[in-house]
Amino acid sequence: MTRRPSPTGTAKVVHPLPPIHGSEHDGLLYYHGCICIPDTSDLCHRIVSLCHDTKVAGHPGCFKTLELLSQNYWWLNMSWYVGLYVSHCDLCLRTKIQCCLPSGELQPLLIPEERWDIISIDFISELPESGGYDSIMVAVDSVGKHSHFVETVTTVTTAGAANLYLRNIWKLHGLLQKVMSDCRPQFVAAFMKELY
Image 1: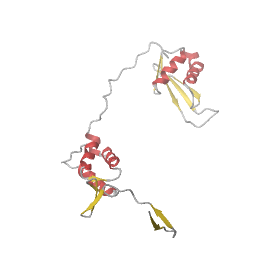
Image 2: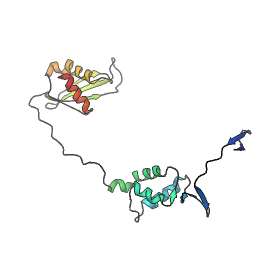
Image 3: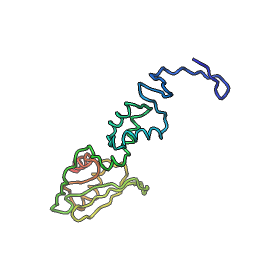
């Protein structure tokens, strides 16, 4: 341990740093055989650009760019920096294919035989409170596009939504056959279970 003077004039105890696997040669600091790069984003940016953007490198992606860099260079949070750089590369975003499953074919909606057989339900939430309500449940008929707007609260449960349907819409149009909603599929299943 050594004592160094602090700005306040009192001695401050400084613990020695643990030894790192580094060395200095020709004015460059090496860490595990790689050149240590200081935390200046300009220098890091230029080095990553050389290993990613040049015609020889060919925009190889995150892991290959990191592999190319780590052969000669090292800096703190290098993998995070490379991932951020590659994820914002304009050419990669425009030309690389996305590694995700292809979306399936669009399925047409069933054409109901009667009005109010198939409805869609959605919620308009986080509205200014009025009369104790801060949300609206919207039920729309898929045939005639007629709609009902029922006041509710943002914290309404599936059972509460089914109860709102029974009290406000069922008495006018009867029981439905199918519900469509952009809420979770679990909501639709629980909503139908509550009704039947």
